[in-house]
Length: 133
Length: 81
Image 1 (cartoon, rainbow over the protein chains, first blue to last red):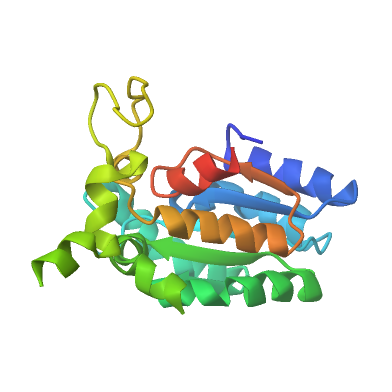
Image 2: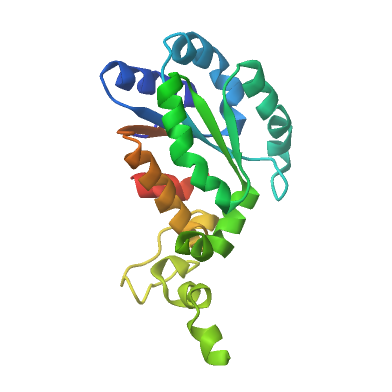
């Protein structure tokens, strides 16, 4: 289900949760500033377990300069909101995803999974090695 | 040694897999014209990882996923679609 904006997506996820579904959202870190209010007053207030798969733009390897500033604030904002945050930097980090999803459900909290450019670049190189395990 | 290199999985996948094709034009394998796709998806980079992430989400019982257009996660969104 596509959303036009991230805070709209949060609202859709909250509605889905209240309707008995298990929601998740896929978005970009540059929109975190937009969703602070929705996260605090809707997702956190109603203790909605919401895995947030977020692309971490503006990190090393980023070609677009305007993405960098928000990258500098991303973890600080998440820390301020007390949202458990996991940073996927290497392909091996993806093995933690099932545990993170279970943790979100158990704790009834939103959790953030940040996937940076190095993660995707390295995944392309080592994906065969990773899945042979 | 060259035979091993030529048939190793990572070298084999790029030129021959559908996802390895890049640019606009005609795809011999699919018989279709190219759609414009994000750079990462065009190169087929991390495509297995996209599928793995979606499989993990499904395995965790996630049954409602909303997405906002995002270049880096375009592969995941495509798998979800």
